[in-house]
Length: 99
Image (cartoon, rainbow, N blue to C red; front, top):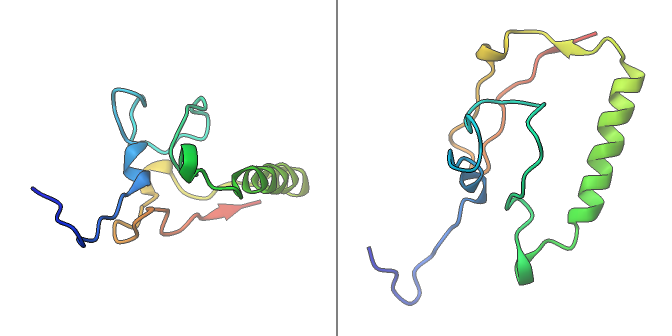
């Protein structure tokens, strides 16, 4: 395949994080997976300037969520979680929880 001048090229950075050579069982949803470098916020000159703020916000949200709802847990077997294949960045179709 050749990319010609003027062709639209879309890169699915979410797909980059599914390399079995880098990620053990890359298609399994695993909250305990050790952190590894990824491309979600870009790299180099294309690095998202909002990435540090987004990381801080996520840390605060998840730590406070656990503190506010200490009995929060998944309300279905992990095997029943489904992902939306029609979204470029993927994502769960639903995340049923109970507390």
